[in-house]
Image 1 (cartoon, rainbow, N blue to C red):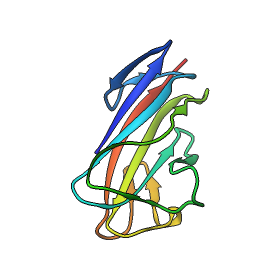
Image 2 (cartoon, rainbow, N blue to C red):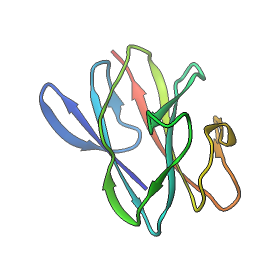
Image 3 (cartoon, one colour):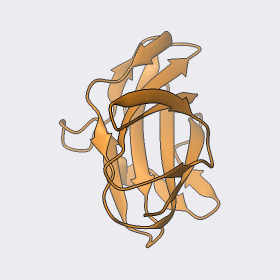
Length: 125
């Protein structure tokens, strides 16, 4: 699962899936895994464009994720795009490549045995 924290005007607060966000908001993420595995977070804008949220380094390869709750390093500043944007937290028992994950309007299709958590944001000005 993933928890999202938004910082706006110097105030940080947890937000829920489906909430409104805007350009300049900074997001930080926490993930919880029942057991160790490998993690990647991908985003998909309303336009259909996809991007890598985590890890930013590593050439599009998942990173090891310990069991339990972990705050991911860094934060993401939201751009000016508008509309429904989704974040896909992909957890797999084994390492995987970004190309193995296919995003769609209905969710994400990943490698067998993997799980996906979806967090939706509505971006407006």
